[in-house]
Length: 244
Image (tube, rainbow, N blue to C red):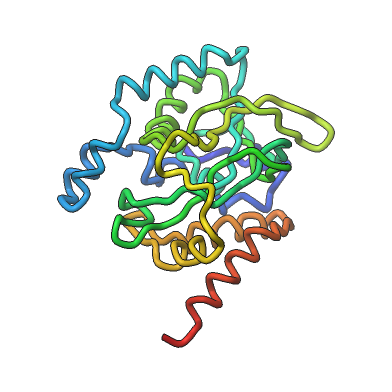
């Protein structure tokens, strides 16, 4: 079922801007099925986590959850397409971390080996604005299995718990941060490389530029201007507008 209207009580402007989990590609995402239908991406299967490794990660991480409902911090595509059922969504800020475009994507979703894409990862820094979603305690088992199948498909992220600020309240939230031991996390990309990858990256989920545009759009609905994302999007648009 879709999120109840009460889930948007703090942010009614987001109702209708978050994909109904029932309609999400990731709700029933099956790695083997997706890649078996794309022979050119068969090599990717060797780069992904096994089902048992992914499940072990989920169980180890949730062992640190103190019980009750679970908050999940979203800073990228989870902000508009979480795929899991949630009871509440709130705007939040996580100090000590930043949204950085350092995930060089070649696995076919928003980029390929021939034309890499670029996506965001949560990395150490000043602070990061985003959303937090509250998963009801009775739904944690089912919904985090879906979440792990989506976020922990490869080795780009590591699950952590962070302090997230909601107005004058601080909560603990699950987040997926950059795993610097992964080859796909590239913290030393130049600005020119970032622009090029975002401008050219495309795959079965869409383009890297759409991904960045969606972040800017979701913040706009909240009346938030993310200067870094807005500037990067403008630079990509300017790059594409240049005569060839």
